[in-house]
Image 1 (cartoon, one colour):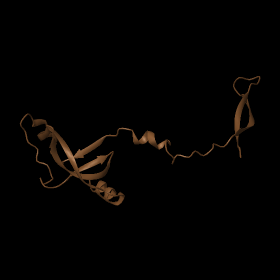
Image 2 (cartoon, rainbow, N blue to C red):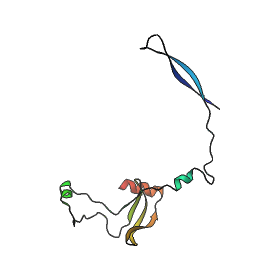
Image 3 (cartoon, rainbow, N blue to C red):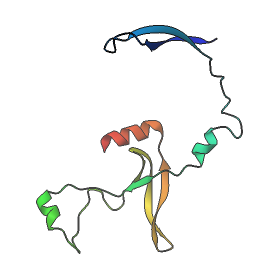
Image 4 (spheres, rainbow, N blue to C red):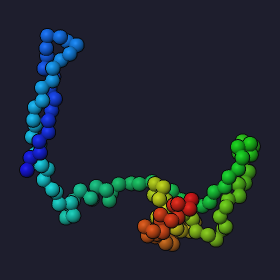
Length: 127
């Protein structure tokens, strides 16, 4: 079933300041529904996308005066105890917790728990 819309078309007149407008109907065909659930569907492009993941090991608040005094060797004490898990975020939503480990001379995160929607919303609101 085609949808109808009205388009406004200006009709020139003798006076340039006040053109008359003429209304015309236009038909738009309905878009066919596509099956995106099958193999090779459009969801595959999303599965191969790279997304940023942020890991939070803790946080603190300090006055700007103290921040400006920081230099090499300064230590900031974070609010999180050493044995608590780190938090993994996709965008601003926490999706997992884990532990900091070392892999081939680099920091890494071992995922301990994947959060459900309810867990994620509650943790994000706490932060």
